[in-house]
Every structure is written in C-alpha cells, then in structure tokens.
Picture 1 (cartoon, rainbow, N blue to C red):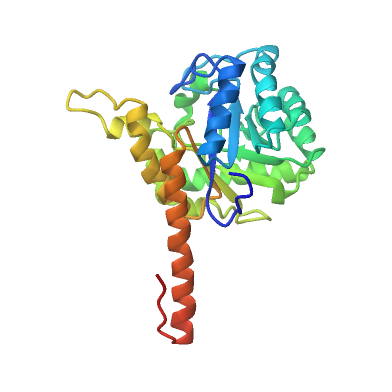
Picture 2 (cartoon, rainbow, N blue to C red):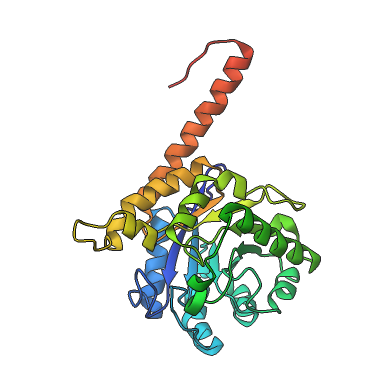
Length: 297
C-alpha cells in the first residue's frame, strides 16, 4: 500500500512465478500474468510484493540459476517500475544481484545465507533489507532434519548464529529481518510451538535484538491437516485462507513486522484491526497511569 507507515504489521503478497509451487503453481508462470497479479495484490493492500522463481515446497527440486532469472527479472522490473516495494525470494547471490539492479529492495533468503556462500558478501555491499530464515536444508530432504528437543530454543540459537555470521560479514543488523521458517524442516507440532511463542523468537541473544520478524503461515500443510474433513482429506489450499487470517492476527498481536500471504484483502483487514486494538491498549495504559479514566471510541 503506497505510503503505508510501519506502525502496523505489514503484508507481503506472494507472486510465485513457478509451475510447481505448493498452493498456486502455474497460475502466474507467464510474466504478464505474474505482473498483473502483483499489481492486483498491491491494489488490494499488500505493502510488499514477494516474487519467487524457485519452488521451496516439500520435495521440490532446484532449478538452474538462468531459469530462475528468466522467470523473475521481467516481473521484478515491471513491478518496481510501477513503484511497488519488491522482495525476491531467492537463495542465490547471482539472482539477488540481478534483481537488486532491477529494483528489488528486499532479498528474502529462505536459507539464511547457507545455500550460497556468496550471499552475505553481496548483501553487505548493498543497502537492501535481508530476510534470514531458519533453514536446515533443501526441500528435497528437509523433513529428515525436523528433529528438535526444544524447537523454539533451537530455532532461536540457529537464527542467532546466522545473524551473527551476517553481521561479521558486514551486514548491518538493522537491515536484517528474521523468519522462523514455518514448515521448513518442521512438523506441525513444531510450527504450532513457534506460533505460540513468536514474541520470544524476535529476541535473539545477539546485538540488534529484538529483530523485525517475518512470518509465513499462509495456506501451509499444517493448516490443511488441522482443518481436514471427516474423510481425513486435508482442507484445500484456498480453503485455508480464513485460518491464515487467524494466524495473521496472532502474528500481528505478537509484534511481527510482516506476514507473508497469498490472499490479501482479509489479511489486510486483520492487520488494521490489530493496529487499532494495540493503539487503544497504548492509550489505556497512559490513561491508567495518569488516573484520568478517559475512554475513546
């Protein structure tokens, strides 16, 4: 949303320029369709448009860098040219460099710099915002690594290690956003534990904390399982949108900087409701301290 102040949780609208993403693979694979979809998401209230050219769904195989670039570059250029705040979901420094040149202002690295040793150096030499997600390996085998004794503590410790390494490489911690990586090397029980304790996740034991927090619950399989029908079949992807709104509300209440979603309008309503509620809570706190007894509508 043009000119939106970051006094509320922001919304990142997803544009998957892929044939195989878990929720909408193929829907926006052609550049013209992807550009039109990104434009629509912005008009609906998305503050950031997140463009991705490589699926990270469970079991997905990687695509060559040239193909990833072919998919995302025209979309990034067009959306940035329209004035959109563009993020690119990539693990490759080569792709990140090209899309920054094309106008992207956020690099959303689901590997937290682990997939490409050149990524930290590239980001350090730029002025973009850098999303560091908790990650234990590529999609093809990530569930084999979903082993935790204390998922919140371990995710925090591993994120802290990546943030410290990024800072050592020259990335200003003020430009770093962290993401607990819901669904990435995590079973449903792990996702729910992280969601219940999002406020803790922001407070890593490294300089710069608390960090801005990006949360990506949209349409994920743990929601499909929770909402399964009597026949045991998971709820359809689009049928998970109301549950996504509920989690957007929870994330915003927990102080998330941004929530990444596929469907924007209802989530846009949710973050604005939470912002108003938090505003009222702040006013009530001041009133109580002053003993004025004032109320507001």
